[in-house]
Length: 342
Image (cartoon, rainbow, N blue to C red; front, side, top):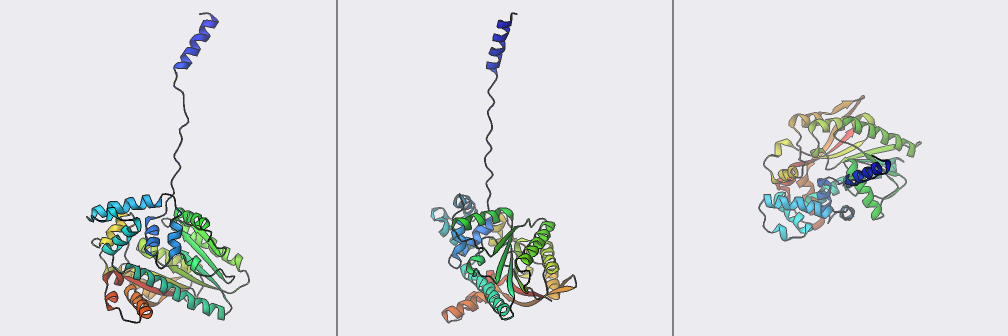
């Protein structure tokens, strides 16, 4: 075959080959935890910052509404498909949790803020700087509620995706504060949590190199999404790195008061793939007796259940007793405890 003919054949063969096109990969959609969204929405009346944050998340309504819609079918609620996302969420929580769920969220915020206010006043009187650790911060808005002050530093820890979205949301509504530090933590990896706690302590020491420091840890809304073993690891890590005098607030589900296999609220969170965990009685005995590490001990100072806190707060607000709230089973399952490292 002559050279021109050979060249023509090569060109015709090349024309038969399919053109290879670059395959475009869809960008990975980073979503916060469903529970973080749910709690922020539930607390809207008490803590509007959380809702302002989640409203900046692209596509959050469609994704969350899809889950609520699916669960409404599971519980056979014919009205929910015709409601707004906000009304749908409120109706769902009222049906599967308690008609007083908003009151319980308000009570929890009030309980934490009351402890923090008294603790900060004591620190100021003693000339100490205040440092607040928030493991599992979610879309909690303590950093927005508490003042941006030179004597206060807030350190937030959470799963990387949730924390990344929260920071983007805060920047979008221009409320990210300079006295807040952020550390992403994979709670399924104990070593990661330990490393980030240590990193945070180093950053705190750099911020306040010459000052006396007081520490407060809020584990609000975290313990019942961790296994008892993970809770024990978390408490031990805090005990190891934090000094005596540290206050720790936590709310937790008492295993003797809760059947997660039958309660609809627990079933809903399992549906969201974030099931609740209870504290077994042996762990309760252990935290009551006191955990020990590094020559320090963490001991429970006080305990009250969520229903009592909510009823007391409401009584102070409206000037009348609320025995029906104190008796609410959904309120009674959660205990509020304050610990101190000594």
